[in-house]
Length: 595
Image: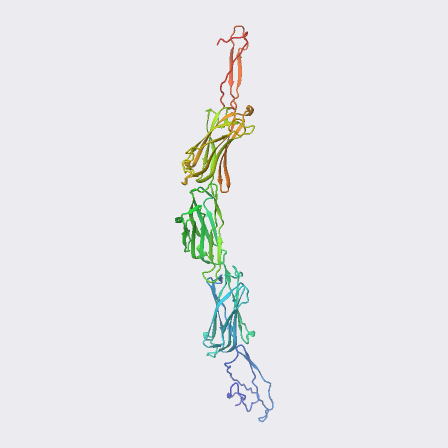
């Protein structure tokens, strides 16, 4: 057609004959432009080469002997493109042990044939099982020979891998060609769970999921998407506290349980929480006293005579502490001196609401309650010499002391009360003349339930060192029961008056001392318990001085001389002096007394 003229298109891409130009003028350029439609069966990711060949040309119209070098260009079909993996779980970015989470991602195809196609999903790290899988295929995609298989590459998991595969996948042409709509998208979904049975699943473990495409030309293009998630385990703590460490029979104990969701726990919820506490049969729970403070948590509570239970379907970390209190009364006939062991309280819960959850049990510390034992105190009552100090006595003086035995409410087994004056060689010699009990109304004989000593308590006396004096005395009460009325007053006391006489210090020693030891003894489950008390005395012998003064000191016969005789007790001693006798004696040749 000449320089600048348009040449007609006379064939298609597969045509062997082309465009013929009969003459190209000098200084002219012939441009041949053609279009080719990519075949609908083109292989995804495949590169296709095209080699347009000029048949020939010559310097004259009849010459076509020269053939130029071929020119080649390449066309590559778009590969499948894999999208981002998204995980859906109760807490973004993490999963509980036993929780079923969902992972979703898509693969986008371009028109053409993919051929055999597969997507392999594999969890690594921790031990995650793929519970199920599914895929939805866009309407423009023809996929045949589909299969989904599961397998394990992790000893801690049974199905940590899922393989989606097809023998043939083709995406039909559509217009416009670059319109990548849902019709040419494959959407994959799997459900995954961290099973409780796998020891690798611990708090903070971070499993990773990889999705890898496989097809004929996959080696030339990106084929993998990855995603990770954190395994979180819930941890709670339970403590148990008591308002007292010792009780009498019939008294009340208050128990407080506190359950805390630890801040360090990665989880934010637990399920099926069950808190329980038991108390020995020594106690009886006041079932009406059970109270629960649980902001934001709905609980169910119950109590029996010896146990309590509090449950909650769910417990969120944000709810704060759960505080449980209840009271229990100690048996009125509890053996004094016994120690009641209280077991640990427990809090059990699940890592998730259902499925392959992990169960946990936390325990508090154990505790104990000591049941009181009798105590004794000794005080001065009176003595036979009114002006005698309470602990400084004359030889021959009689003193009365009083031992007050306080019985906690409960049962005192095989109880005795003993009095012993020291018998060392340097001790004051003391003779016990009587011991007399005064019994409070609540102190009973355990066998008859009558007030103790109603039918008489027989004292026992003994001379321990053979000096003829009774240094030892005792009451053997047997089993004593103290009525539990919740009040510890004089009704729980036994007073015993001890009357004894100071017989003299050894070798008339001035300021000799004596010690009365008083012991109340009772049998307990852990052995004999003795509560002691004591009272000491010292002997102060009266010491006097005398002075005789004559006035005048010289006198004539028949003269009068006045004598002043002074008897003095030193101020350091307050003891009285008895049967004082004195006299003045003069030689008969000397003097006589006019008065």
